[in-house]
Image (cartoon, rainbow, N blue to C red; front, side, top):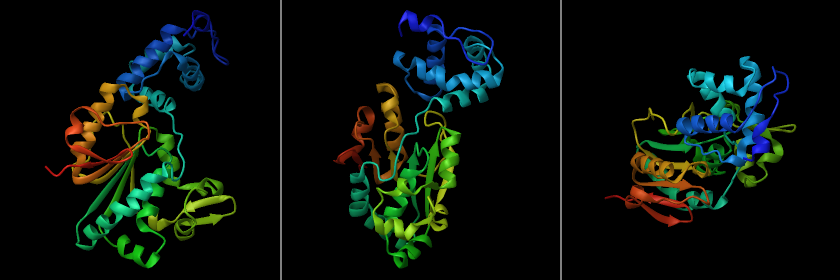
Length: 289
C-alpha cells in the first residue's frame, strides 16, 4: 500500500480518525491467524469499505480502536472475518465436476445406499448454497421415481461456511430465477419451484442437508468420514502451508476410495499427495492403502 493511501482516510459518520497501513496490517494479521486468509496490500481499500460499518456499529470511532476491540472480543473478530470473506459462486460452477460425479461417483453412491450403507458428503465452504444444491440435484437426477428410493436411504450432506450471512442464504434456498440458468433443464424441472422471479429449491432436497457455520482452520466436530468432499475456490485465499495442511485434513476425512473436488486453480501437494490420486481435472480419489 502506498504511503499516500495509508496516510489519511477519514471514516464517514464517526469521529475523525485515521485508517493507515498499521491498521491494515493489524487486520490482515488477525484475519490470517483466525481463518488463514491472506490479505495482500492491494486489499487495503476493501478492508476499509467492509469494516467501516462495523467500526461505526461498535462505536469505536477509529480503526485503531476497532483493532484493539478485535484483539479482545472473539465474537466481534468472527464478525469482522466473515465480513471480509468472498462469497462469489454460482450454480453448476465448473460443470465438469458435476459431469464426473454423475458419470463415475453417482453409481457407486447408489450401490452403497441400496446395500443399506450410509453416504456422507460435504460441501466445505458452501457459500450461499449453489454448490450444495447443484451436487444434490445431480445425485437425485431428473427421475423422481428413482430419487424417491434415494431419499429414503441414509444420505446426508454437510454444508459449511465461515460466514453466517452466507449460511443464512444457503438455508433459505431461494434465488433469482435467472441464477438457475446453468442447471440442466430436467433437473430444474424436477427439483426447483418457480414462483414469479424467485426460484426455490424443493423441500425434499433441502431435507438432505445439515448447514453449519464452520471455520475450516478450526476444530471439526465431525467424527465420521466422508464419501465425497467438495472444497472449491476456497484455498485460493490461503498461503501454501495453509493449503497443504487443509488438504491433508480433507484426505484424512475421506473414506478409502472417497473423492475430493477442488477449484480449477488449486492443486494437491505435500503430505496429502501420498494418499490422494489425481483422476481428473482437479478431482482426486483417496487411495485404498
